[in-house]
Image (tube, rainbow, N blue to C red; front, side, top):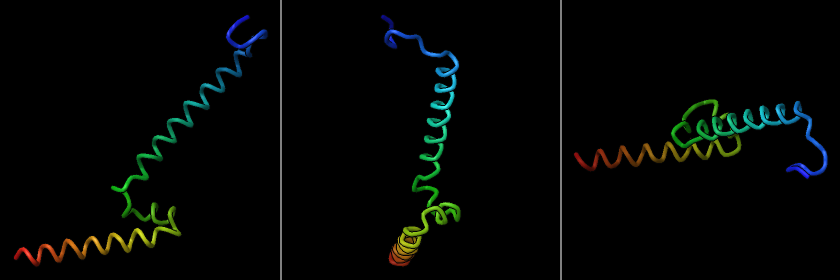
Length: 75
């Protein structure tokens, strides 16, 4: 009895499944990198987030105000 039980797996199925799994892993990791907080000011990301995109924009504006305040306070 082999690894897959009593029957043998179809070679084409294994190859197709391996290729599809590799593609899903690649695109998943690519999306994970593109959805990082460094890219939050991109328009396409805000369109993707839609519901929470406005909150992200509000938070970015608030952070800009804080930075401005700190710069003015330091002068």
